[in-house]
Structure formats: structure tokens, C-alpha cells
Image (cartoon, rainbow, N blue to C red; front, side):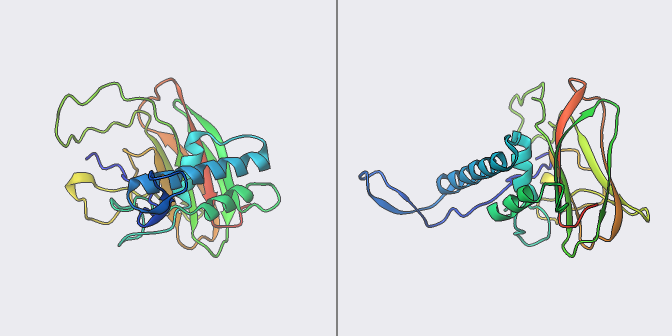
Length: 241
């Protein structure tokens, strides 16, 4: 109800061949979140395994989640996220490509686990001339909200604790903001990307036709609980330099 993007990801969950309880060898077709959820879990496991094979370490939870939302296939009536499919349909191959391309020779993707300190701004300059849309995301594990819902129905309280913000500025001064939805006030409206997002702990900026130099800026609103916040920066869709 506060406008955050839920669900966050979708996967095939209808007529999935699965094991059945009748015997140790029986299988059949089943449907529901009980089919979609293990599929997503399996993708996460495979991506962590692949990342560890290449870089001898595992992704933080926020990195794995952010990578999956960053590389999802578009789904729904409008471009961008919605309240039916979230960020879209999970695509393990797309995510694996971004992991593969995170190295110094190809310069085709960025996966950086960073820390934002209270009162500071993180910036990164990139140049992209890719033929595909440029996507730049931040993802973080937000601290627990101090309060709790005491029975209010459909609360509009914003539960985000450490509110990080990303924006991307072109060399000509054009500013690109992340996607966001409107919550209960307009649940069927298309997402917007003309201002900061203050409810989600994953934010993605899409630039349809990148050309030239860009500056990525990550800031925060208010004060950061704990004095700092770990976050992951993910970028793909261009040849970076």
C-alpha cells in the first residue's frame, strides 16, 4: 500500500512437471506458488554457483536479488514494473551473462558491492554506446523498520529505513530517474521514472538508446541507520569504458 513494487519477480508456475506424494517415483503436473518458488530458488543457487566458479566468492543476498530483477524479461501491459509481474519474468541466462561479462577485458557489465557512508555521495563515470538499452540498478538489504503494524488496514506508512537513491546524468545534463509505482492511490497506472523512489530497496534506471558519457550518482535521504549502508551497483547493456 505504500507503493513498493510487489511481487518483485515472476516465474512459470502453471502445469509444471513435479514430484507427487503417491510414491517415490510418481510425477505429474502441478500449479501455484509451490511450483514457481522452487524454480526461483534453483535459479539463485545456479547463479551463486556460477559466480563462485568465476570469482571464488559468493554474491551478497542483495546482489543476487538485484541481479535477478535487473535482468528479468519485460512482462505486463506497460514497460517497467507492475503489480502483476513485478520486474518481469526471471531469466537465468540473462543474469548469467551479466556475471560472465563482469571482468576487465569485455567491459560489458558492472557488478560492484559498495558501501555508502552517511552524508556522502557515490559517483561513477561510464561511457556507453551500446545498441541495447542501458540498465543501471542499485540493490541493498534494508535494516528492520523500528515499528510494527498494530492492526491498521491498508497503511500508507513508508517502511524503508535507509532510503538510497540513484540517478544517471548524461553529458548534456539529461537526468534519468528510477522506475516506481503509485500504490493504492493508482494501482493500475503505468510506472513513472521522473523522480526519486522512496519505498523500494531495489531501483533501476533504463536508458533506451545510450550514447556517450554518463555519471551514476547514489545518494541517500535523511540519516543512514548504522552510519552506512552496503549496496550493490549493477549495469548492463552497453560497452563501458
